[in-house]
Image 1 (cartoon, rainbow, N blue to C red):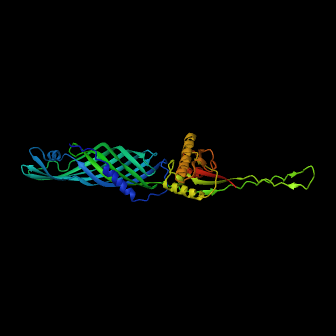
Image 2: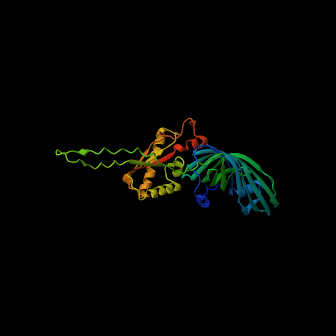
Image 3: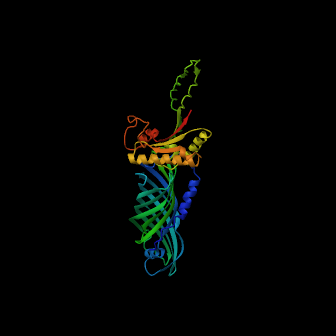
Length: 397
């Protein structure tokens, strides 16, 4: 039995990229670490690689010489499946697959003809691995077991007397695949994959079927993390300090006292705070600025044009989910990302910008209102105000 090499994924990658370019590039960010169930469908081109002369000989008996005169091994295949994404990197998936049918025609010596057809269908259970490349793109790979049934139908004429017109074999074997995944929205994913199925060819020999398919995946119960509009906050102005009393200067001759000008009141320090929700600037659990975040920071930089200020303090904050060390590092990375963007793209003097990360130490939410410690959709949404970046603009007036 011939075994075809695992096909190239170049055409697969091209297909995935073209499909993604036709979709919107701006959508609500997802909580990729939250577990979720999903369902999906696949359709594509299945190509069987079977040893047709051996099959023809097996169903007609000895004494004939077979010459394959025609074959069609490329037919439409499809899958329906359901799965559970356990975390950002691993999921399990089960489903039904139908790899279509392949046909061939053989002429024999002594004179005769044989027409054959093979159909393959079955069930599978896979472990699916995900390697994120960005908030939306990911590489995927799978390995699993499948139980496939191969059924043959053979009709002979002349000397090609068929001894087994409807052979059938069911066998459990492996399957594997690679591909790419694109998150169009949190509730709609597109995959492009190539999979390899190891099957029995209905007469006792091993064979392979490759399936090139595009899948539509529908996560269940996932909601997007809404983007909050940045809210500018200006603390109350400090209480003005009364000017010092005017001193009198007296000379020995006791002339009329000469008034001395009162000193100018001291300059008052003013602080203006602008807060950005973390989801406005970054993807969930990420520290790289996304396009929407760049726009928000560009608008902030424009508002500062022509304004006299002494310094800008960028402060990153996280919610309490995760370890304190991890949250502290993430908040520092986000603050640094905002500082670097403002000083490079916003043309703000780097010496006037400082960046610090406070992690989970200064929440805005109340623990009594956001109960629990295990991440879930409800708790993540409740803690949204804690995930933020504050920009304190310091000046004098």
